[in-house]
Length: 114
Image 1 (spheres, rainbow, N blue to C red):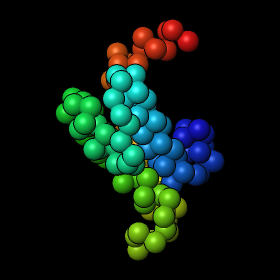
Image 2 (image 1 turned 30 degrees about the horizontal axis):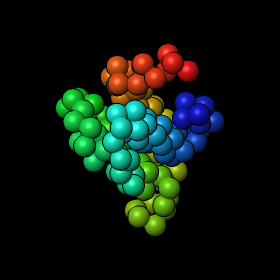
Image 3 (image 1 turned 90 degrees about the horizontal axis):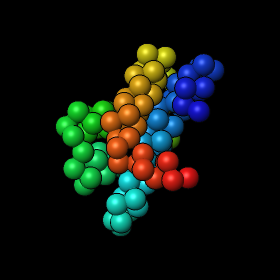
Image 4 (image 1 turned 120 degrees about the horizontal axis):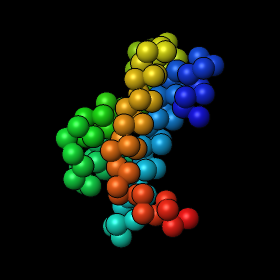
């Protein structure tokens, strides 16, 4: 859905959905590994708690703020849709995809069981 929103110029929504996908992925890894799921939306903190590799944490850190910024227009000087463009949205979605690819080993076994 994040990619589809890029195609319809929903760049802020694409960034938000990239964040949401990564958040759900990281929280699912907590579950898979039998750990309590933190009740936070800071995906960089989730990544640290899961001891993810630095390159993954860097991608996660770059999309962490998109939960708040893309969702709540009162946290910045501008309306979210004015701050996001196609390049930014594509970058956020690509980073989310890299996180999924990097963590395949941590969720692949469950995926093949289903």
